[in-house]
Amino acid sequence: MGRPFTITRSTSIAANAEVIHGLVDDFHRWSSWSPWEDLDPAMQRSYSGPERGVGARYAWKGNRKAGEGSMEITGLAPDAVDIELRFLRPWNATNQVRLQLAPTTTGTEVSWTMRGEHVGLMGLLSRVMPLDKMVGKDFEKGLTRLKAVAEQAR
Image 1 (cartoon, rainbow, N blue to C red):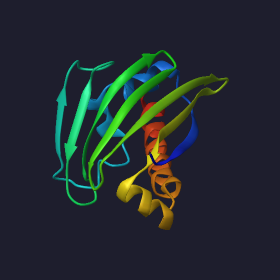
Image 2 (image 1 turned 30 degrees about the horizontal axis):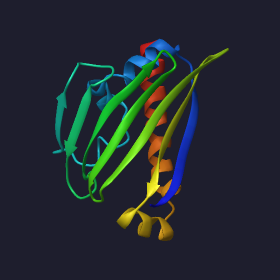
Image 3 (image 1 turned 180 degrees about the vertical axis):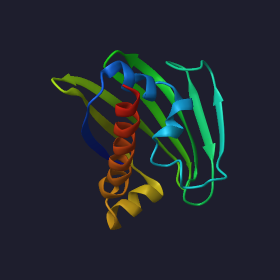
């Protein structure tokens, strides 16, 4: 059993939760804001299950930077989207992701959290370069993009 980790980043978005929810509960719309979309322009993507919501699934296979894996929406509420994130390459790992939406006086506070365990190659790598630093900057980039898309759509 590995060491548990939690990574969270948050931002305020001047858009209502429904607009943001629509961008995160539909994997087809992730390409407009995901921080990983530009890692490999030739990345192979596939979608299965329902169009959106619980059971919707997205899989990718890309170059060395993009790796390979899948995401599946496992839980849905008006204020949250829960996702199981499975990496196959560059390392094998399964993590739980939650995008939490909290109304504010100016819009919505969005928190992006990933939980899992440091195991195998990821466990070794995390000793040299903290996972929070590596993934945290991706979350920050994604939240900045999500903010831009959501605020334009409102």
